[in-house]
Image 1 (spheres, rainbow, N blue to C red):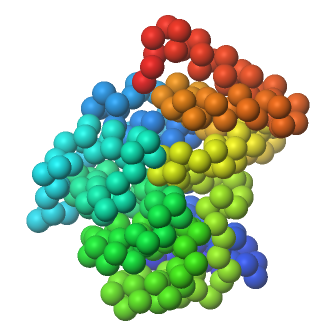
Image 2: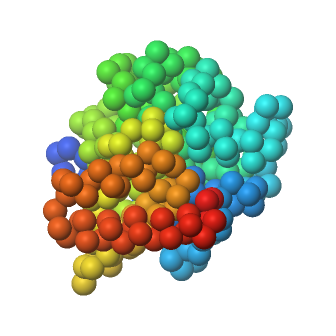
Length: 297
C-alpha cells in the first residue's frame, strides 16, 4: 500500500517496507543524468551547467525564498558560499555548522518544497554516520525547519548508520506532528542504510548517494553508483536505463571535480566485472578529456 505525507510518497514493497520504500515524487522531479550537488549551484559558478535528460524537470537552481520570515545565515548568505561549503565538506568537515547550512539552504529555496531533498537527505545521513555525536544536537536545531523540509531531517537520520536513530525519531515524532504518519511508518519497518538501498528505486537514490559522498568523501557511495553503469545498455527497462545514464553522467562530472571520485573509478577497474569496466573506462576517458580541455568544474 501507499501513504502520502505532504510531498513524500512511500510505497511498501513487502515485510521490510522501507527497504522497498521510495520517494516517488523525488524521482519525478530528479534530474535524470545529474546529481544535484553538481548542478544545484550552476548559477553561482560552482559547476558547469549540464542538460537534463528528464522531460519537464525543473532546473535545480535556487528559487526565491519559499518561507517568509526565514532568512539565511550571514555566513551562508549567498548560494555560491553555501554550495562550495557543502560540495567540498568532506575535505574540511565542520559538523557544528551543518545545521546552519541546512537552514540557509531551506531559506534560500534550494529544497523546492521537498522536490530536491534527496542530496540533502544523503548529506545529513553522511554527516551523522561520520560524526554520530552530532546527531542529537543536529536534530534539535533542525526540528524547527519548515514543515515541507522536515522529512529531509527525518530521512537523513533514518538512512544514516546512527545506532540510536529509533529513539531519536520517537522524540522527533512529538515535535513534528505533521509527520507522525511518516515516522510511524519508518519505525514499524526495518531500517536500511542509504548505501544498501536498491538503485532500482530511481535517480533519487543516486542523488542521495552523492550527498553522502559530499559529507564523507568515502568510496562506498561512489562504488554503488558505479555498479549501475551497465544499465545504460539495457533494453526494455526504461527505469534502469535512466538510472544508468544518470550514473554515467554524474560520475564524469564528479570525477572532474573531486579527486577521490576519479581515484575510486580507477581503482574499481581492477575489481569490477567486465560489463562495468567497459563503461567505467569510458567514464574515466571522458572525464580526463574534459579536464585536459580545461573543464575543471
